[in-house]
Image (cartoon, rainbow, N blue to C red; front, side, top):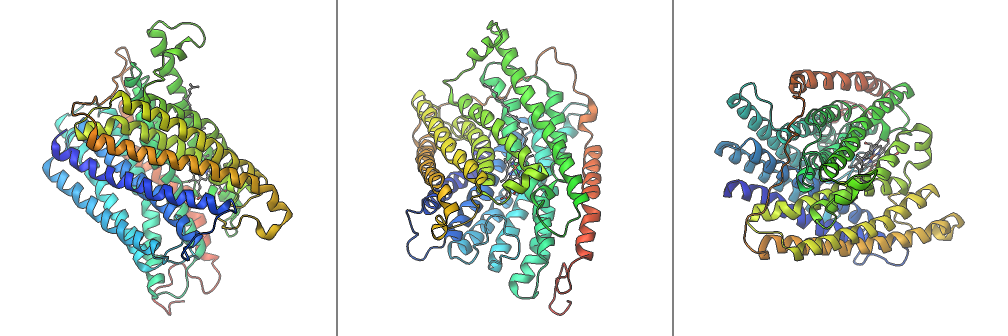
Length: 545
Ligand code: HAS
């Protein structure tokens, strides 16, 4: 990687770790408020900090880390031209302007609309314009990545694209197609409404467009973790990629099935025909398949590597795993967390069970296991070698030890916090509520113990965040200079050749669009036709209604 390429990726990393600190602090404050023992000072609102927490960690940290990491992968595998780098910088600055605009409105209390920001909650127009800029900036990153692979393909006619480049392009395609929905809501509904050009807004349309984006968003977070599991972890444990074809197929399945499933977030929502909810739940169960393929593949990688190293017996291979290497341990705990995290997802997606858990703090527990453990621990695991590789330093054994302590703190804190969220949710405790005792009602007294446990877990997690930020500073400024290994695994030498159709982009994009039309076209038209008078979908300018 050239110096300029390293600087580009690092800029994204700085935003990531600043976000981690700010967002984490807000999380700590929330758990303290919910414990019933703490009130926010200086008139700061609960929903204000909840919005900062969700937007900064769920949207800003993730997007910046992912784009920065993916640039590194693309530059390493297929290269980046001068012009592409300049365009990438343009995307970065557009995203920064948008992020600053949206952050200021939230901090001033003018956009306490939560990270899902759909109507009827309304924010200052600068919040939506900021969001639109972040989306546009990220699209620039998409097109830079697409172009990088296209140029490489032209120069390597007939060759199979490098696995990691293929995966990045899938993730960016998924992001691009998904963000079209939220961009439409922001541009056509929210900006005119918040500026006062429209008097009303169609809430169901705004929520449907949000969830069209909101579910693939979670796979946009997950896929970079899967890139690491498929193609980086095998190298760290001294093995090879189990199957290039299986890895590509699972990514293709994510592209096709992660988008037409948004209704599983709207199962309790009136105004959507149950038949279409059923269709989308069926598709949700399809998107579980590539995760099961990934689980299979990971076990296969661990076992084959162990057996090659001579570890026999049913579980002998387990011993060879480098448990003391934080580059392995952190993502591995992430994988383990995905077993209950994914199971929780399957529970959420099942209609009857969703009636029990929807809008309870169980859902918050679910996404703290998935995004805030599986994904984030994998991102931390990547950072231990990625940051020094970008800053020209070395991961020392002392930092490695600190990393292991960080991983343990995170695991303990999250087990306590997310575990009590799951239990309190089953007892009926609502999510997104600033109340803790509900005026002393009997039912709330069942929850309060778990809410205190959440605060204990949240405090432990905040210590973990402080330690991670300290590690980041060490890796950027103080670790000894040197060359850190960039671990990309190779395929097994005797692997079957990857079938060519897996790179048939027209086929996969065509099928994706087809599935989206099947899942959304008719119900979306129904929603618009059945909207009550006075709530047209796009009431703009005033008077059209
Ligand atoms: Fe989810 C709500 C369904 C996965 C994130 N989800 C959310 C929300 C977020 C979120 C943020 O159907 C809240 C949104 C809001 O604010 O309202 N989710 C699913 C399903 C899956 C799923 C079916 N979710 C995720 C992932 C997320 C995420 C991934 C973030 C990264 N989710 C739902 C539903 C709701 C929901 C409903 C709405 C609830 C409501 O009513 O509001 C599936 O993708 C899960 C499939 C995963 C598996 C696990 C495979 C296991 C693997 C690990 C193997 C381990 C190894 C280690 C190899 C089947 C791959 C072994 C090693 C040894 C040493 C033993």
